[in-house]
Image: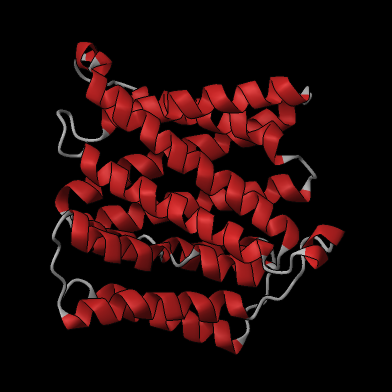
Length: 283
């Protein structure tokens, strides 16, 4: 069950990424898209929430605030890393969240993995490296990147920490009543407030088209977070995070199918490694 839910969440996240790619191709700024993204995500996770009186308990509010912090850290650090680094290199470093999550979960949750499962965790990172390592397209060659050539690395690492923190925080939230749903509601609520405040601060003009992209992104991401929470309630965080890297596979295949991207032989090898690792984690 947890494998199926993790794969389903990865599929939703990959679809959300393809929506983001459309928005980028149409030159919409990320700060235009994010408010609608988190607002739509809030509506998805709050839909048919049981026993609303429990929503106001302090542990749900606190866990939601923590999740919102890591979620925003991931979103903004990844955006800033892409502005001063290369897509392939940034994606590899940001993808190290599967290893960070597995190692941290050993201490926080005393999760015990077999040697084969550890090989699958590191193998999935190797597969991700093969998939993204072939893409050396520069996103931005600004002067800031030349002043600090390693800035992209530290920002991408922050994004990986944000992703891992969100996963581990959601794992903690599954121990609360009603699972992680209440924490997710507060996460999207707080993140939406922050994004709207940033838009107001920078006086960004929200266009209907950008909000539609954000709404589609939020709906898909919210569904992905719900299924991801279900996966964490059934399986260990170390392995759920590893299987969730299938989003990389789905995202790349979506680019090939819908955007005419051409995969190199190295990337096909990466796809094969990822699939093998997803099978090994279930052993």
